[in-house]
Image (tube, one colour):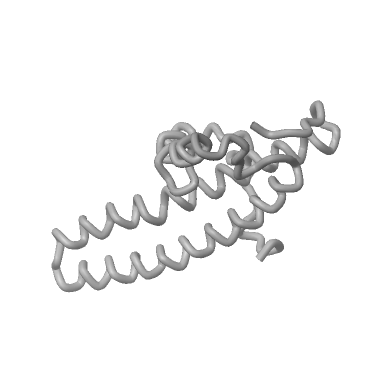
Length: 137
């Protein structure tokens, strides 16, 4: 999955501002393994980090691709369901499914791409374009 062209970041995604304008940082707080839940877990395990160093960031990048793929598959099912509901003139359910797909699939896809952009910047810094960070916060 690593070499699929789809997963490559577009230029406008690389600095993260595009997703930040769409509210991804707010979504990230409440998402599974997001800031809020990680903070709660650190209460009982102060050393817990999803990303501890450069190597774990590379592992995390692979997980973002897998997670994004799963949400893309779910999005395809949701879109098919919305077409079916539209053809049946079930507009109330169509609206409900639209918002479910937005929260369950579209924002998580954007979050995975946002995280991958953060890792891209880390890798770029590590390879000499900026100072080389050894640890991630």
